[in-house]
Length: 297
Image (tube, rainbow, N blue to C red; front, side, top):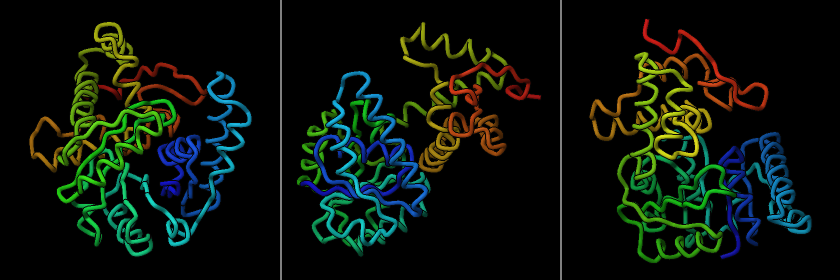
């Protein structure tokens, strides 16, 4: 397998494209506009510069990596030679289902179709295709070039052969693949999102402040960053979408999103991507926000 198509040039998509290209794969990066693609390529270039400065790769490696990435605004053109398509679009089920219908009609019949979804059912995604045995979840962690884990999610019909192929492929990227079954949130977000939601609820209820909550989890639980800072990095809109999938899938009150999270997303306070969440990110580094809006009235 040498030809990979990646759909979406945002944070996850450009990271996935970067990683495949760095390890010698030819990558077709697909998005709806040339501007989005240019932003994605610029991000990849900056991240490669960071790797060069740390001695991880050479300038020659950077140049070769960028040379392996081709840009497409046409989904049909981008996937026509792909042996694997990795979808990394927004975490919206209707959008993903529409994308997979189109990929299924355009990609070669033997092409494996993977989704980077962090919570949406692979079985449901596979159901809109004519190749459910070749549909699988390939959930990378952010930042993709750095993080080692790939959560491999088998849908109800995913074949053993396809699962084995994706395991081997992940290992070729120097990642550690872990197989999980297809239930809401899989493993990573089924455990992580309730923790983040509980941290937000603790802030909302006035149990402790932003800095105090994050400090307890960093120093007391040996987490590299606190749950509120992590939520800002993930995107509060993404956290809310995943919690809704968990709540709808299990129907249990413990997965209901905290009202503070709902209000912040409604107000456009999405974390790093918007410049403000639980912290202020407008100046490139985090600054603590002290606000009564974080508490119940």
